[in-house]
Length: 218
Image 1 (cartoon, rainbow, N blue to C red):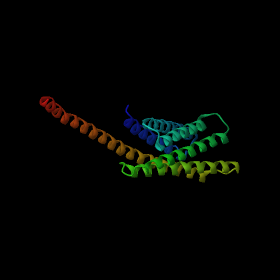
Image 2: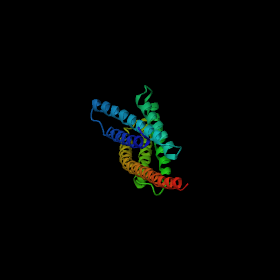
Image 3: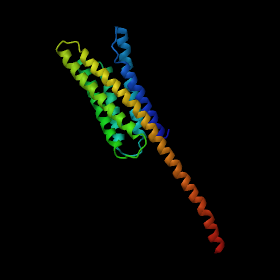
Image 4: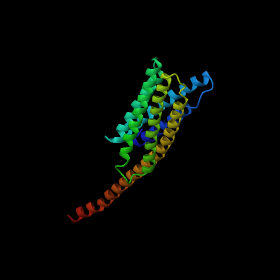
């Protein structure tokens, strides 16, 4: 799999993962549905982590985008640890909160990279996509913090859950925008590479008659 394809596939997997995780924030009306949504959240974060890792691997050199994707992948792994490890409820939620803050940081780092090349195709989608993902993850982390405090006070935590749900859907919208931007960006790079190769071939073809003429004259 070449680097351009890795980045497109990675962005797509991350988008699918964020949508699945957003679906898991729908209020469950039964214990069975709650377990199902917990499983969806794990699957969603696993896809996000895999997608972010693929995007990072597809970056040919060091960049803020590569670092941002790596941080996001670490954040997803931290969230998965909080959802799957057999810890006290408080510690599980702290891990999920930390994971969301890491994802927000990674999104902000990737956002910074988009301002370096104003002529890049899909830039507006990538900027808005990374911005929305960073905001969404920040809201999820903030909501998780409030939820933790409300539980300590013996409250239901419904208001915090609403913040988490809003943040999840904002992140999902941002990830879809990032997919669109990534496809446009990679298409531009493929077109640019093809043009460069054609130009090199034409130059080589033009140089052959010149070499032949020089040999004849000699």
